[in-house]
Image 1: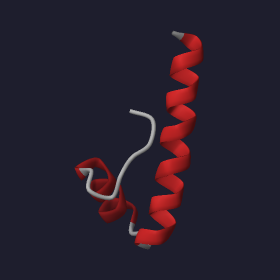
Image 2: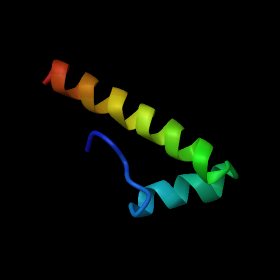
Image 3: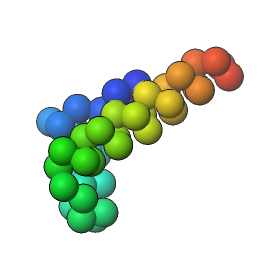
Length: 44
């Protein structure tokens, strides 16, 4: 998984527990999952 989408349940769990605004959470989650995906790809 490289980028999380707003229809992903993981996204909504993170938003609810972190109490972030949806727009901020969307940017943060996309960047975090992008970095995770690229790192996993380069290490694999």
